Length: 276
Image (cartoon, rainbow, N blue to C red):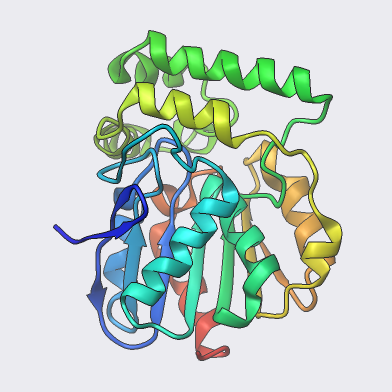
């Protein structure tokens, strides 16, 4: 299994296909499996390199300083490109991975040939409110991961799918997709994810000026049923120069699980107009 070392982290990644490189970063409780069905289409035309964020999947972090923040994860993305000797790359992101990805692009969009932001935001705390309210909310979410095992968590999603699993539960293929979701999330360490949640989601500032400074071609995609990220997606599309916005009708938050072929085709269509 391929890993590369950055400071105190052993970061897991996969590398398949050939051509221009796409580095992909998943969302909370996900890992490289999130992109599995998208990857089989992309690798026919591109070199596809998904990575497990810190605190997720097979990536391991040792020591007290875990780097569970958007800036460190953005630096991990760049470090992976450096490790693989990739000068310029496309960056595909989902949800929490997009929080880190768009903030990386604010700092270094010259390294990014094409930026794809799916179901995400430019703040790292989507909920409005004062810092103490935000802290208490995410602490409650962290406690949820600590208290219940993955079978209980996935079972509860059938009853309470809002906000992230609404599109899946309302789909005719719900059982198949929920099986894929369970296979994916069950690889995660719940206590580590709880630690990640408490550390990462702290900044409600969308950083408008940073968005306006992004110079790379940008595609933003969100699902019609992705209630939490509709307005954040529209905001980024307004502020990032020349950004293109696509809404997926009838689709929720988990676009790579719900409509992988459509997502892959939109990525391919976008990137062929913006070669590295």
